[in-house]
Image (cartoon, rainbow, N blue to C red; front, side):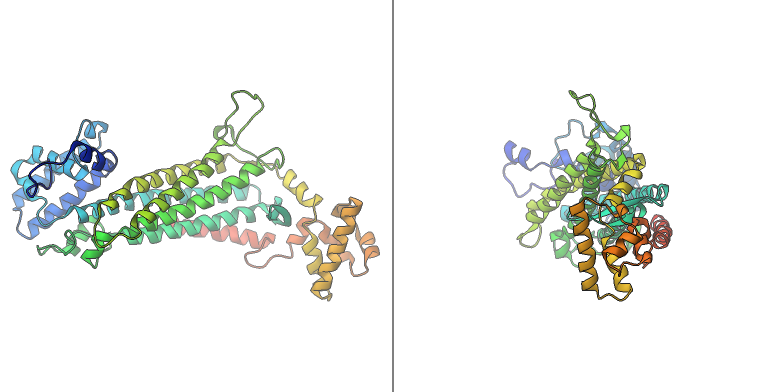
Length: 460
């Protein structure tokens, strides 16, 4: 069955049908295609194309098709051009001749836009739920080790000491921004395109606002040409998916390192790791490596559609059929990565003595010393040089901060007072950083509480 053909003397060649067919991937839109067509049937009744009885007959036939579409064998053996043609054919088999009215005043261009919007809206909601769960797990992990001290890094070199919850809250902020991006993408998706026709607007006086209410859309599109040409709403989601993947990949990289023997900060659960077929001692962070790897795949989906859309003339071009496979793949991979990441977070056992030792044996307290000197009146550039000379002397002598005390520091330079000597302990230096957003214990405790409240709002 074709939705077109009167203009043609011959049908499409086998190779063209095989090359252009999309049912093997757009079949997953069957349910939303049916729901959109039911709403369109009701719109056709309102403009007098369908009688009330015909509309009821079509809607009931679609209800039966929805039940069938939920079964794996629904697409089995089908040779239709795409999911829209499949649904119309099955409607014809169920409802009879009245089914030929269902496409009155409707183009596949707007139908595709509607289907993808309906489908993507639900997938965004699911992804947001997974993201919220991950945020909750990060907060739970932070609260399990509220006083753990770790080195913070720049250039992958130990820089300053921070609290473990402060570190996790950095990822909380990243993923919270991702939640905002998903919400914004959903807002752009949640616009109803029916009534746009192929490109010039429908020739029938449909109540577009009524159709939008029927399908739960917040508003209607404003320009029929734009509808036919638009895949920005898909790109908006893919951008949000990219930043989620980027942040997941950075977290994965951190924890691949931190769970290694060289760091030894954390242990990943057996359920999220795997062994070696040859080396019996191995416990590999495969879950994190797969997240890191799949992030590239998600980013490629974004680039694929971005490049496909670049330079297309208005309005619709068949190139745009290539939107669905990267979209579907990105949706699947983001969901899988978020689910996996949460399982990893829930499995983590921190070994707080190891990062604490890493902080204590290094000179992450050097900035604390310099700032204490500055607070005591030493110009900061001089304080910086003085702290730097102390570090240099210590490195030459193989001394750690713990090898110094108030007396030896004062002997090094009288500007190092006993009060400053307390800062040789990284945990003491953090107490000077109670500024909002800093790693001071009180500031971090407040930030944890605030994060919990923000998450509750996101989940509401």
